[in-house]
Amino acid sequence: MKDPLIGLCGYLLQRAAASALAGLNARLAPLGLRHAGVAMLMLIAARPGITQSQAGRILDIQRANMVPFVARLEGLGVIRRRQVDGRSQALELTGRGRLLLARARRVVAAHEAQLLGRVPWKLRPMVLPVLMALWQDEPQAAVAQASGR
Amino acid sequence: MKDPLIGLCGYLLQRAAASALAGLNARLAPLGLRHAGVAMLMLIAARPGITQSQAGRILDIQRANMVPFVARLEGLGVIRRRQVDGRSQALELTGRGRLLLARARRVVAAHEAQLLGRVPWKLRPMVLPVLMALWQDEPQAAVAQASGR
DNA sequence: TATTGTTATACTCTATAACTATA
DNA sequence: TATAGTTATAGAGTATAACAATA
Image (cartoon, rainbow over all chains, first blue to last red; front, side, top):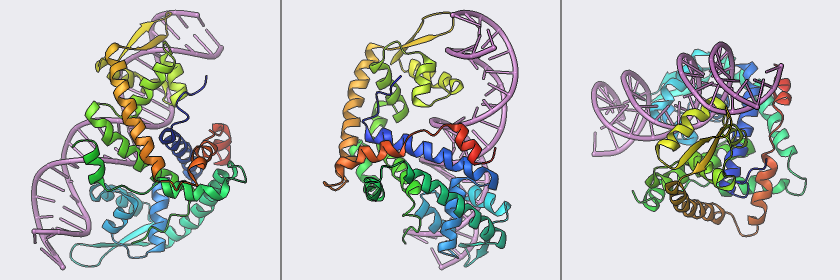
């Protein structure tokens, strides 16, 4: 039973992403993390002291949704919040966070290798350029206007 | 503020898919449909009389989750269910469904054009091959085993 | 016995509005 | 006035377990 929708690059993009995400989350399950948590840990490691809002803007997570997300990571004991001024919370990794991130990085590396391993050798150098081109957040205004809102 | 995670193809894949999906759903909103509904209509149009379970297997939607999904589309009056044997439900488009699908196809075509339009001319022929290579559902057993379950 | 559809349930993710307290 | 964090809430999407009816 063949899928008549392959041929639509938006559809392929979604299915490929969902499949890869499921695979990654299965690999991360033993660590008690999911993909979003690992992305957050990686971001904080790259920019220690980043605030909740800044992290949310980079990862495209809204302020309101950052609250339970950050709380969960804090509850796992992998990150810590520090008040930088009256309103901003700086995020930092704890020792346990650094340890868990090191393990997660190995899982992510294995996942990346598996993903790229599926791509024929000659196409492999095109993977990142193609994905970066397909990403490119259009200003929401343009979308909203195009859709008539 | 640059994103330190670009460079991970799994991350790019997810962000690109999320961004494209949001754009498509914004375009589809005036029709009262979302991406999943359009995928379903397209599938039924390509295989009239397909059963709920078969459709779920192709679109990777579980049996239990098909129930409210199909019910919503039926409630919109775009599909109809027909009993083929004691247990299977064949799905078909209604007239209204065919009409709405025709409009949705134009929206999808515009969305596809926009997606591909972001990709430099020389990379464009690689988009579908790259995405098809990155998809390739690994047997779940392999994932489960790799993750130690 | 395996499959189809179903119910119930729960968890994650996402989206919006409104509030506060700070800058 | 704009921003950071928060609360509350609602809607998707997804996952599992269990059950009845049927093949």
